[in-house]
Image 1 (spheres, helix red, strand yellow):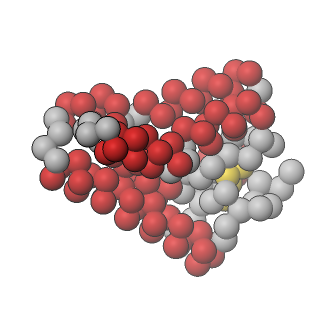
Image 2: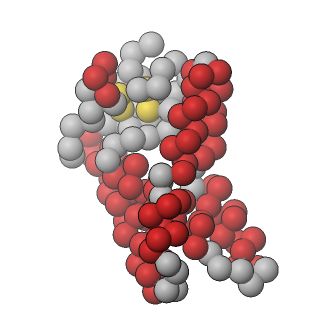
Length: 133
């Protein structure tokens, strides 16, 4: 498969990366304003990347698990549930910050064809990192 087939390009890719940066900044600002502990942020920030281990079961399973943990649907759903039950929203804010940070760097949702094929373009050595802008 062509690593750029199905990937956003040009201004659309730049816009999606800027959106990721905006989500990252908003999540960090909201986290700070709620006075959640920064030690928790540091501990949990990279947890979604544990999903890489699913690639041991093959690229289709790996992409599915990675995408589940790198989609905004998870933290938004968890955040709504926590707000409705009167609980702190630290975890969904950290989760959203992680996703936004990844997207800002050009790491997108994965296609099952290969780990480096993403909706934001090819990444890594084989595909080269997406060019800025």
